[in-house]
Length: 198
Image 1 (cartoon, one colour):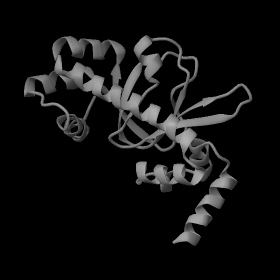
Image 2 (tube, one colour):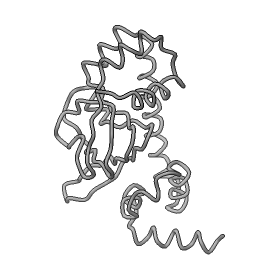
Image 3 (cartoon, helix red, strand yellow):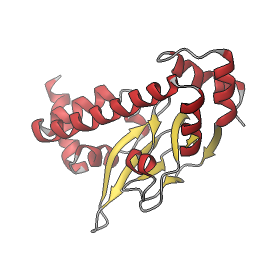
């Protein structure tokens, strides 16, 4: 069940992209549900099929994969008004490449694969809305690849601070280092250097 406050947060976000009639809003809200996760709980695990596209009402999540040596590699974080999902797994309904885990107690609006297909059929403008979300995620992913090749660790960290201004204090330093592709010791050196440059 989705509460009035939760409903308002979702519709406010969507209204910045598309305009829904009261009837369309009611239909949308009748098809989605809200789920609460505790810190440490997984939304998706590698190898499982990702069944939901999730809108973050509150909390913080990380998407990561674990390599054959057990090393964790963080791909992205999501906070309030962001989306989280293993998009490839969700779209193709095949096993997920990534884990999504809650870093805080987290509340999500859940859109199942079947529900999204039903929403597309009944509210065609939502197909454009979700297409835009997927396109932006794809562009962000490509740009991140370029940054990892082209920028120094310091510049990647500065970009991270700009991209995630509200969450640096909410996550451990070793996770930021993993996201940047460096060790936490090297991140400490980068931060010390930036302090000296001020």
